[in-house]
Image 1 (cartoon, rainbow, N blue to C red):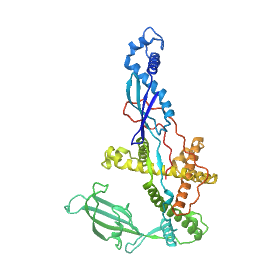
Image 2 (spheres, rainbow, N blue to C red):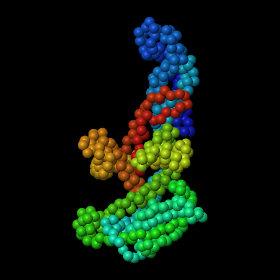
Image 3 (cartoon, rainbow, N blue to C red):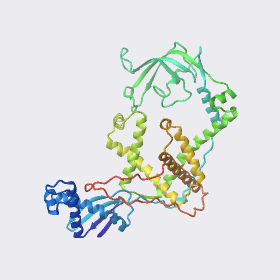
Image 4 (cartoon, rainbow, N blue to C red):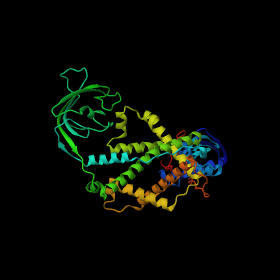
Length: 481
């Protein structure tokens, strides 16, 4: 067997293989026997018809096609072994250049390769600060509002009030008798302390009502943006007319032990404040680190050399699509409906939205994998146990999980899956911690024992038509940030 290889720019290898003529002849005989086993040939039992009879019955092309498939199955593992190619996904038969002698051309995707460069010289200050006491005060006030009661008040509207209104909205410059595009009698409104994007009918609407009294009417105008999802309001200038029907003021509970116990069975306000401070700190730190590590990994990426074949990117793109489909399903939406709502065709959606996200996710995960290897990260038993407990706690809170395990105990497969997810989280956490230590100039030594890279499985190419690239048969394992 003669083999010639040529590495392509897309991180794949073109492999030209030439066999001996007797190998093709042997494959023809075996192919004829296989065909005879599944083909009904008059006068012969399955698999017993002579070669010449099968040739006349099935035809030369059928035998040749079957023989090529047999040869591909036979020689492809030997090609990988002799060339030492580490395939990232099943290869494809690009071309049958010749039958006599038999010559085949395979296209084999290489495993991703990454050189991080001098990443240990990168510096980025880490200056997260825990939330101040006023943030704790704000959180407590929010809790008081959540546990408040209301009562009718005889005064002007203030922030924090609940108001019942009659609301009418007409497009500007329309006739007086024209049908309103918004008409909501008995429309409830909460007078927000700050503007939020989800406020209806527009952000900041409730602030227009501050100071109004019961039975008072007020008009004001708002211009909606041209990219608004609501087609009736998109790009329109609307005149609103609001009449106040009821004002209910908020009665906040007193800050005492009863309130602390009601909120979360805390002993007193002091322990409640400590819990809120801890929660705010964890949330604030997580948000800060999301941005911090994003910047840090981008700095590494700028100097890194990352190579991967198109099949790996296609595989990651499928993950991105499946993630979106799952999120849409939670909102009772299908992908086609979602694309129609956004006036996007599928091809444009893949090119402009899915592929960029897939590239970012893939390259980040490859960087994390290589960092763990280069820094020889090892996860302790304590870290694994902690990660498992945290992952299991999160899963148990999921409503779907609770329904599935209401009658039956969690399966062994599920527990193994949780263990794998926990190990991945622990590895990512330790890798990020090491990366931060490097960036702030604290990391010095690297562990003695390296992390073993994952095994690369040698796989057969699927029998596809020439020029067709096969998708990976197995998921490419990677950590998520």
